[in-house]
Length: 522
Image 1 (cartoon, rainbow, N blue to C red):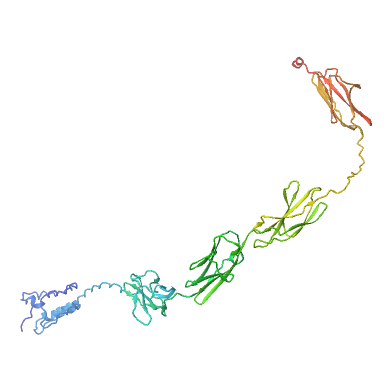
Image 2 (cartoon, rainbow, N blue to C red):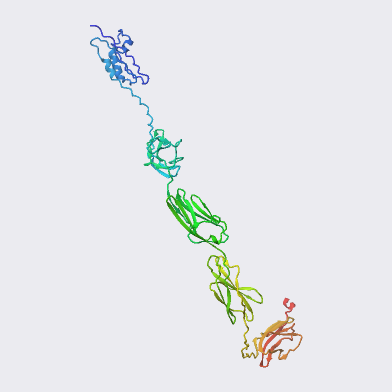
C-alpha cells in the first residue's frame, strides 16, 4: 500500500486590491507528519483547479472560508484514504469584518410649487402679480423664481425675467393692450424646477375700471367765503381708474377760462383764481368720469367786500336833550348780509365826530344826553363781515338843542348853629424839669366863636413876658418856659373864654436843681 503524502501548507490567496487580504488558516503538521518526506511543489498546491471560474469583474470577492475550501480540495492528492483534517481546521477559522461603504450624499430635490398666486394690479401695458413661497423647500434651499407667460389658446411658455426673481412680487411690463395671457410661476433651486403654480384664468391686459369718487374736503362742503382781490387755490382730490376725465361748470355753464384756471392730475383737480372778483361768486360743479361711471361734487364760492353807506338818513324829531334818527339799508351790501350800523354825532362848533352807537342792528335810534344850546349833525355807517363801509350817510338837517326858560331857585336850608362855649379836649399834665432846661405845657380847646386863650401863673396873668412863649393854632395851645430858674415853679393855668362862656384848667410845674458833681464823688 503506497504511503500517504506529507501535508503541505497552503499559500495565502490574494484578494482583489479593493478588499483587504483575507486571513489564511495555516495547516500545521503533526510531529509524525514532519518526517522527511518529499512534498510536492507549493505552486501546484496553491494553483486553482483547472476549469474553476474566476470571479466576475465587479463582483464582491467570496468570503475567506469559501476561498480556502476549494484550494484545499484541489491541493489534496487523489489517493484513496486521505484524511480531511486540514479542511476542517480551515472551515473553523473566524471570518474578517467587511468594511462599510461610504455614506452617499443626500439626493437633490426641487421645492414644492409656490402658492397663493394672484394679480395685484394691472393697467394697459403691465400686470403686477404676487405669490407666497413654497410650503416645502427642502435641504437644497430656494434660489429664486421664474415667471412665465403665454397667450391664451397656446402652450408657448416664455420666461419674462432673465435673472431669477428673489422676491414674491413681479411686474410684467411691455405688454400689449387687449391680450389675454396665462401666467405661472416656478421655483428654482439646485434640484431643478418645482411644479408651476398658474393663475386659474387668463388675464386681460387692460386697466381695471374703478368707479370714480370725488372726495370733497370738509371746509368746502359749506359756503366758501373770500374777499375781493384774494387768491383762490382749491384742491379737490378724487379716485378712479383708469385716469378719470374731469370737467367743471359754473352755475350750469362752462367756465370762463380767462378768469378761472383748472389743472387736473391723476389724483386731484385744482381750481385757481389769481385775483377774485365779485363776479366769480357762484356754484361750481366738478364731474369725474370713468367709462360709463361718473361722480359729481359742487362747492359754493362767495366773494365779498365792504358794503356801501345807507341809502338815506334823516332826523325825525328833537325834544329836550334827545334826537330821533331813521335811515334805510345800503343799496350795495358787499355781496353779504349787513351785520349792523355805526352812528356818530358832531357838534357844529368843533366839527369833531364821536361814536355814540356801534354794531347797532335797527334802522332807527334815539340819541340822548345832548348839550343844551349846541347844534348837532349825525352820520351812519354800514357794517358786514368785511368791516365798516368806507363812506357814511349824513343828515341834511341839523338838530339844535334849545335853552328852556327855567329859573333856578335854590332851596332854602336852615343854617346849623355851631355856637359852643369853650371846652378843653386835652388837659394839662403836671411836669417836672431841671433848672436851665426849657419845657412846654400843652393842651387843646374847642369852641365857637373862637375862644380867647390866656395863660396864668399862680392865678396871675402871664401876659407878654418874654420868658414865656405862647402859641395857639387850630385849638392846640402851648406855653414854652425858656430856661426856668428856681423861682419858675408853681401852678400854671390856661383859660379859654368867648361869648358863650369860659373854661380853665391847671397843672403843677416843679423845677429841680441839677446834681452837684463833687457831691457825687464824695
